[in-house]
Image (cartoon, rainbow, N blue to C red):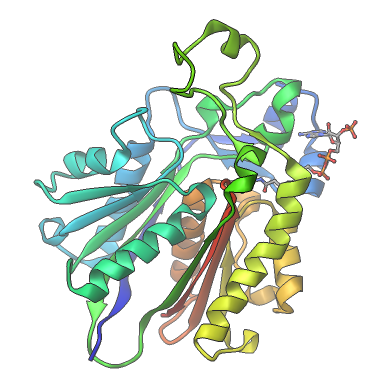
Length: 333
Ligand code: COA
């Protein structure tokens, strides 16, 4: 019997400092009302200076390891997804490995932004099903607050994003009960790369770091908000339908849908597009903001712990973001 990849533990961590919409009103020309109406966000978490993405990742990983009830020494591979690594290089995978004291196991870094968790899940799933690894730590984490433009110029972006991390432990399930990852579907269209990106630093510039770029704000992330919105509302339902079709399942079979928490209006449009009842859609952006790759595993952990996701449920994950990249994953929980 072919193994399926099953999630045996989940965990998440957000830094303690809560930043409300009212706090942001003090920094830029915005309002609590505007942010709530346009994004559904009431507050998000920001790190204190000196805390990096790998630190958040390690906390989330520790919680997932405890939840799985495993000895960390039995983890045989790490996959880490982030767009905000502690350093330009190396990625955070090796830092997580060293901070957790996981010896010399391999550590793969995935760079697919908001779709990063599902892309990473897909890679880990292939390793497990092929028998290459038996216990993978998959962690997705972001620190975005330290590089957002909190002036009026950057207000479209800076009100949306928050910091946080989520992690899962993945193992093979060969007992034939059908539990595990049913499929992952990954898509991308690089023609839209510049619609949601951080243009600088770029090694194409010589030297890479130039004072002028800082003055022009070109080291801050930028997006074409409306184009992102329209594409996200279209692409996530498409990815979910591709997954359902491949498995001979219908929208009515879904017990829990976890869309990437980009913007609550997008999540509601995705639900409407799929004609899935609101109570099946997991949404936590009001408290967490958009944490890019970390948003799905954070929401997943909360939903599992709250009993909204239970054994036997069909859980569907979907994401859309920078690249553009978009994806879905179907999991029999
Ligand atoms: N506070 C107050 N006003 C703001 C603001 C803020 N934080 N950000 C932008 N505005 C202003 C704009 O300057 C614009 O003013 P103008 O009409 O005088 O030019 C006005 O609000 C409307 O801007 P617009 O961009 O048309 O608003 P929108 O309805 O498209 O909503 C987003 C903006 C960013 C909320 C929306 O485009 C969005 O959610 N896009 C997708 C974002 C996303 O999910 N990104 C991550 C992808 S993973």
